[in-house]
Image (cartoon, rainbow, N blue to C red; front, side):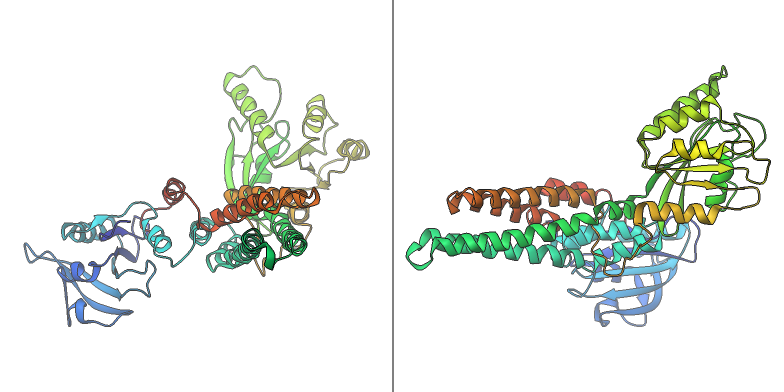
Length: 458
């Protein structure tokens, strides 16, 4: 591990009230003290204090910035190293000048996520908590933020550690049976293997039951709005976003490409895609848009299919109803304010178990019912994130599935009266896989890859 001192800007670039330059490392306080003028040197100040002063260029003597400097001494810091946070005026020039001065005093520009990586390597947090930090930054809804915050606080880690301890005790019991068979009846070891193995298996299953919902909260639900031209797809996008993001006209084919927007629907984050109307067309540009629409439709997790109440069902409508029957989808019969010309009973028959809702988007009617239907479809009306043991990370989900399989193989070996030393291999493998979730047995290349996804300065 590097023991040098790193620095980076930790606030978004651009105009703002405050910009923060963060410095971490054994020499952080001494280095910043070289360019700081205040009532007292930073090296003599107490930890966890914020101090008024100025940053100056020691070569020219020029005052660069008026600042508030936070002094944070190890080990009670984010990285468990000495840290300095220089609060200066927000703005591209101001923050960059301070950073360059800090770098010129012997620090190194931090890599993306390196502050959090040091927190992990120094034992302040485990790998799942570090990933929770990234999820916290990227959260699109309050509930997604709650999930990430509980992961940062270690609730998932605690459950994983408990399961690993159960497996470790099982392995220890097997070792005693192998090394000192005269002190431990094999029947008792087998009983312990069954009891603890079954307990771990059920606990992993409980965690995996939250995986689908947790992944949605973390990554957003890929949602596609489809329908033939001029049925109200762009109006629906605007209603859900509460903003005029898409151009709405009475001219068919106005939307020529896929429009993407994130939206919070009753705590469910949607990655909303408004598509070009699907129809046969000779327009080259519109034809490309239709092809893209068909592609994103195949990749969608939720489809909002819009029909026009003011017109009878067309061949294009019937094709879309058929095309989306394998998707999680909701049928929206729009333009309820106009004359009813659609055979709604036939639509319900074709929809099968899919919800069918009526809307008038020009009057903003039916949108609340649609939002509730989306929530109920994926969260059964209950989106409780109180204890937040949701598993939301794809890496965690894959590892939990593998660990569960190893435990099941061990239990199968017990039922087949396999020797306990053979069963131990699967139990140990499950213990190692759970360790990868929290980083106890993760490879260095994986750790580097995960932290490289962080923003600079975090």
